[in-house]
Image (cartoon, rainbow, N blue to C red):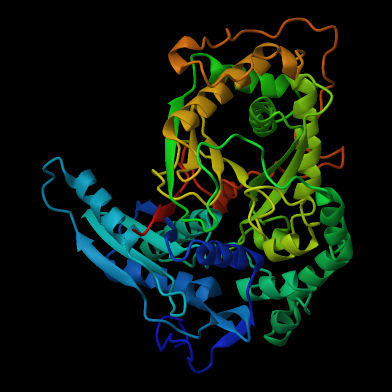
Length: 533
């Protein structure tokens, strides 16, 4: 059992450690409960291994990963009314082997995709570990593909990148007959969860004899102020008097009980928009993310007639060095409260978004449950059920291409933007397809207009008009910004240091760079949020 791959993994397994659930696990659990079991909350990726290894060596590498990362031996259950994670001393390794190394008839890639799709949709029982599975596919001599699927309760997209890099290193070490070179870890995922809940963060590590890493972690804690009451107070102040809804016109009345049924519309960027976005972000002193969110806020401003907007965005949950090599459910969410009052210019709105996002990122440690608790009750409004979530709109960035088609809507609207395309996932109980299409088309038109004339006030940008068809709505020409008499002061992007801003914009994480992260040009793993019906 020393390798962590054998033994019972049932809810009452002997020797299992019971620990507090991490904030990321609580978020995934609450989302699943809200959907009534209609959501398949998986992450999945297919890794290519360029190493002359056999099946047993691939199995051995996966066993080493399982022993190294406690999240791969974890299940979750509710004890005394609270979510707990159960860390098992060992599991049965959930690995299947398939051989596609015969003569290639031109359909090998198609068969590999079918294997990945089949593995991705099989459900997990959260109460039984492991909450992941792998299919090792032999494609040829020194050519393997490993399909890895995991429940978001134990693995987030950035964790898949880490597992990919470590699996490749373990297999390379097997091939070369050397010890693997893997990043140090200061703590395990259960310790990270305890730390989030304010416990003695490194006492277990010290008792296990990891004194050097314990001392490093303790010094890190001494250098970094811990967020306790100040984080709660930040969100209490930030969300005081928040609006009860987004104010967008609905095509259908809001039901008392949601079915979480969703659909999506997609659109490619108009010609020149991708280049204009990169250039505009540089001119405005940051990354494309705040520019894209400013376009979203401009759309909500025009469509709802309001100036106070709440948008949920994902965060990686990997702020400290001790989290960079950690596998688990670290990803979380913060709420951005964006102000479009005073008819600001598009450039000024981007600045507002950046400031709000940076502050929210620095206070991301509060769990979703605690965030709901500290938020002042919204003013009741017609059609708004009691206990409504803090936000009903969401935004995210996609690394590379857009995600897989989504038939589920956790939010009223989710805007996802990739390198050259965008999609709007919408609640089909609230919005008609034509409305969703018009919203997405108007977003791209407003974004293009704001980039073309960043000094123009919101009232000067082309107003969204539901009665105009996409074909009849001309997109503004994309070109160099006109002279405005004022050039925004150059500032380092968040994370560049020197201005006290956040390390990164809170729109998720593409995974760590370097040895622990994906190779250049690597696409992001799939996040499967699809209906089980």
